[in-house]
Image 1 (cartoon, rainbow, N blue to C red):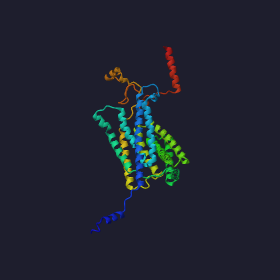
Image 2: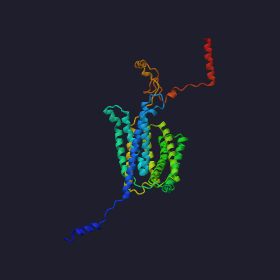
Image 3: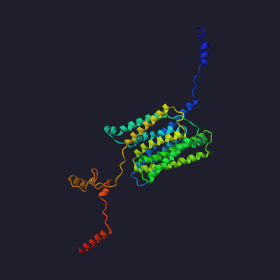
Image 4: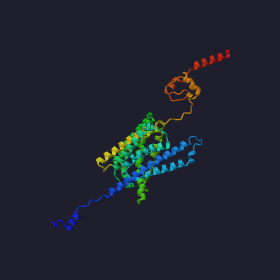
Length: 399
């Protein structure tokens, strides 16, 4: 017994036991995931603050007659600086973390816009109105934060050195070629229905944006990754694939902006934000999983939790944007019922002109579907016009 419990024997047993070894590669990859996620989060925060600063500058100068007076304001230039810094941070995030992890983090910009927008508006409200108007926004922000946490925790952990040779192999791989074939066919069909058949539903326009956006994020990750690898000492800027990806990145971004401008002319900004975020995230994750094989080494549990985080973030963004009020456009016409005399006539029951709808303002030019039918100018044939002019001339002569 004494020999079995001797210190020398215990040291021998301890030396022969297997020591758990930590995989430093996994630790480093999770560290890169965290760096990329933090860069994306802070980048989206800065972009939201920058856009609200520039909007605040434009609102303050709305009565100024000079069109470009905002160039002389510090607020606008501060917003532009923060905007460039935020875009640079989001661009750098793609070099560290997988594409499928960075794309859904766009929900952070929606959360930040909902909070920062209220701060810049500085509205006065009663507690009852505050709960009625902003309870959905608070619930949406909470859900989006929970979804973002799940995305970062269970996001893909597949890392690959972005060399020109690796990107070239991915570009000619069968999964990506099949994905590109399906995307090109779908894009051409949507573009045909949108341009030729005038099918301008919001889903159609934003699907075009999302399909272009999937190519944008693929090229952004390739360009950012090759730049980071070059900074670390392995020069990659001599590969032609770098410049091909850079040109595709700029071209797809420009076409996205064009389609977004067209969508903003037809639909509300809140609708574009929610539907565009959902479609862009789904198609962007699909592109990342196809081109970079983000989920190739992930287990089923992590993939399911990642999808759950996406769904929760989608619901949060939808609730945030659903609560936004629609913009009321400025109408330069004066309603006749705004005049004291017209109000007296209206109170006495004397109608100035017939009311087409309960919400119709007397004397104001408003959108009304039935106005064009009622007030369509009468058209006469050539013979009737000649007879009418003869009658008028004869009547004037007789007078």
